[in-house]
Picture 1 (cartoon, rainbow, N blue to C red):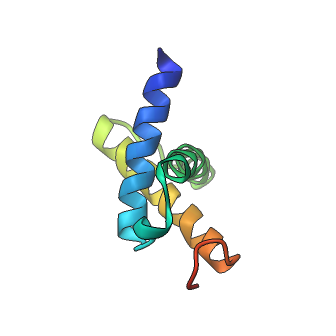
Picture 2: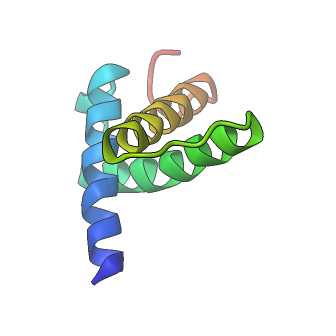
Length: 84
């Protein structure tokens, strides 16, 4: 059950990040889930390296969206999502 919730939340995070980064039209549901899950891990890793702890549901959600947005930015620079 926890995997299912992680995929659902990852999809929501990836979708919101793709809207923020204006790549929503280029990404499908699978890409949203993958970017959301991987971007969340990236965001929490960076927060940990910087010595920040995301406590509370809203702050954790913001860190996840920031990480997913950063991942989309990196993927755009690599040429995977159209315009860089």
